[in-house]
Image (cartoon, rainbow, N blue to C red):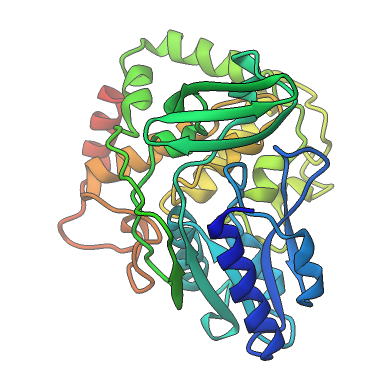
Length: 328
């Protein structure tokens, strides 16, 4: 058990035993070392199964939508990027700030098991970072690889190591900043012709099996009744009847979270078909920045998203269309 995990367990134990919180949201051991799952712990004894390591990439903020309504306060462990999502949920009145106790925790980037498999590293039992290298332990021994080669995509384009909301923080080692341009992949799509982009997304979205994992994990998707669950809509079935319906699901979802998406990357992380869904959201984020100025959803609880905050300086619809066509 790492020093960081020991510190998290110790603090969770203290909060539960003192009665400060009624439950703690964290991660529990999975069937394999590389698949820990989000979990709720209501007793200190249950924390024996608590885990926090390089595979704990899940954003736990959405679990507070329901857990925050239960009696007693809920403690949650959030990585820096996750705190943006919680801020947005509080701003939208999906989570009551008074009902949660936020513990910001250290993150050095999370590993992507699919990237490990692509490198031929299977039966992984653990990953340890050392500067820009990663030591991967498997059933066949250990291997050292470039850290950047195994990180989740969202970690390669990390927004930074700032906790935008926290009641306390637990950081053992200094967190290194990532200097990558998160819009570089969007720029590649914008450089394509319209027909090339259409072909790209047609190929990607054709992989969708409508498992709804992207919607279910997304902190911005918190509607009590989702439009895609409406039996009268004609699109409630998980199987896509047509290629149009196939694309409709993801395009509509992207419009629904536009201006509210914090770019947490959970949609792409959980997609079993490895569709780069985050690129749809990042395109919206980039366009909002271009039209209204730089804006980061979740950075502040009191801020209003540009697309719902009219000012006389707003871009004219006709100009937005023209500029949008040039950067489609």
